Picture 1 (tube, rainbow, N blue to C red):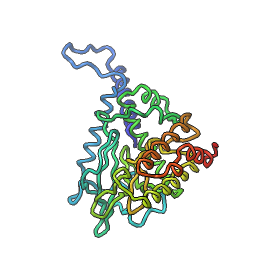
Picture 2: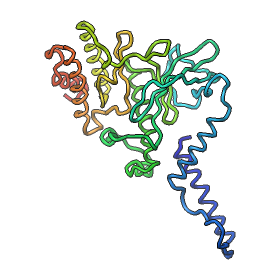
Picture 3: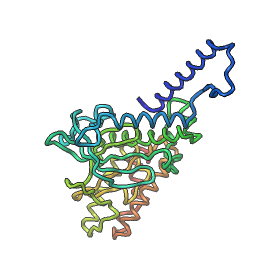
Picture 4: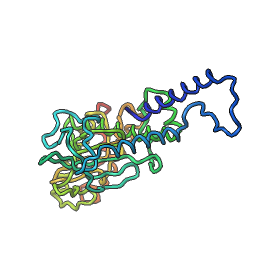
Length: 321
């Protein structure tokens, strides 16, 4: 059950209670020192307090002795089938926190081990920050072309209420999980999306068995041959995205990883639909110029990494040329 559904249930409870109170005590005066009667809908602050109380109660209940929580696999949106052989999907598995991998403006990434007996796998737990710390300062342009079904939710998002900002966080998580699922299924080099529960994404951990994350492209110093190979991988990845009608939306050398010579694209909450978003071509052009600039600075010949030519090719692949 999502948080805003819980809020609606609590709202109806308060409304019903007020109705019964008015019917049963119409002629009875309230003492001067009595607490004021609670009427109307719950405030956004009260809604958040109720949700946090519920989360705290759930988090402290039935905790396994050898981990931080039982596997949440059965209660989450699950990744595409067939599930990889390395993934532990048994409901009796235990999740154990191993530390933080990366902090960011919108989300933090933690290392998580999911284990059952001798079987275990490492996962990256991406958690969008709480309402008090979230900095979705760039969301307006990316959210163009996306619509929510409930007008109340849309108004909350537009007005940036506390409830609305929480909905934005969940919308980012939903969008990233959907994008990763789509791209994984068409063969793009992205981490396998294991599951989504609320604003937490569990993803394939890109790194070694000891829990060391693979380096970002920006951290590498490739030689001439390695640089050319990485460039070819990048172009192939961008063409795969273009065939699906999308672009990354915030592409740079910091959201590409290099693992065992393979280029892997990460951080996709803001993936942009080239057709539905009126600024889609603008985002594509920016993605290409950002990443080609990094390759050019490392010595890629300009005739190979010419950004305008690559943009034109990608638009043609997307059917927009």
